[in-house]
Length: 350
Image 1 (cartoon, helix red, strand yellow):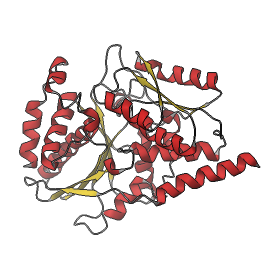
Image 2 (cartoon, rainbow, N blue to C red; image 1 turned 180 degrees about the vertical axis):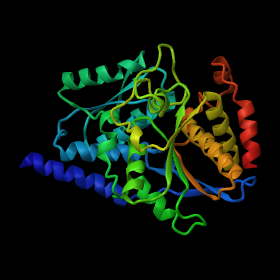
Image 3 (cartoon, helix red, strand yellow; image 1 turned 90 degrees about the vertical axis):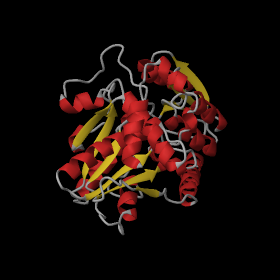
C-alpha cells in the first residue's frame, strides 16, 4: 500500500505541474512571396524546460509510473543528446529521484549545464552508438529503470487526443484562414512526435499530410525510402542535435508519414540563422531543419497554384547552442557553409 500511495502522489505531482502550464503559442510567420500560403510555428521553447521534449518526458514518466517500473527509490536512466534529459531531470527532481543522463561527448555544454541545474547527473560516452548499451548497464548496476525514449516515445503519448501536440495544433488553428493545415512538418529523433501526429490525423480523418524533416546524415529518410536500410554508414553523422539518428529506432513509424525531406546541415543552420533574425530571438538547429522543409513545400504549393496552411514546430530556443551553431568559427571548423542558405531564406521571409 505504501508503494501505491507513493505512485498516486507521483502522478498527482506531474498532473498538477501540467495544470499549472499554459499551452504553447502558435506563431504566424508571413510568407510575402506566397500570399496564398500561411506558415505557423508551434513554439515549444516556452515549456518549463525549454523544448518540445518536455511533453515527451512527462509522458515517459507517467507511462513508467503507471506500469510500476518506477518506485520511490528508483534511479532513472536515459540516453539522450540533451534536451530530453533536461526535461526528464526536471521531472525526476520533482519526484525526488536520482537521474543519470547518458549523453554523447559532443553534446552542447549549455544542455549539460541545464541537466545539472535540474539535479541530473552526466555520464558521457565518446561513441554515440553506445548510449543504449551503457544506459542498460547503468540501470542494471543501480537497480534502476532505463526510460528508453527511443523505444517508448511512440506508445507513451495518447495519440487519439489527450492534450497531445496534434490536438493542440488543430484547436489553435480553428479560427485561421486555412483552419485545417495542408501539411504538418516535424523532425524525428525518437519518432514519437511524428507517430503521435500521423496517428491523430488518421484517427480524426483529416486530409492533412505529414512531412518529416530529417538531417541529411540520418538513417530515417533512408529507411523511409528503403526499409532495408536500418543503420548509417560508418563515419556519417549529423551536426543537428535532437533529430536524426544513426539507427532506426523502435519508435519510428514510417508507414504513417506521407513524405520525408532530407536537409543538409548547412541548410538547417542557414534557416535557423535567418529565422532567428526574423523573430528577434535565437532558435535551435532542428527548427531550422523544419523551416527549410516547410519552405520547400510552400514553393511546390505555390508553383502548383495551391493555397493552404503549413504548421511546423519551433522545437527549442537557441541559447543552448550559443557555443556551437551561433559561433561562426565553430561552423567554419566543421566546413558548414551556411551563409548562402541563410541569405536565400532571409529573402523569402523578409
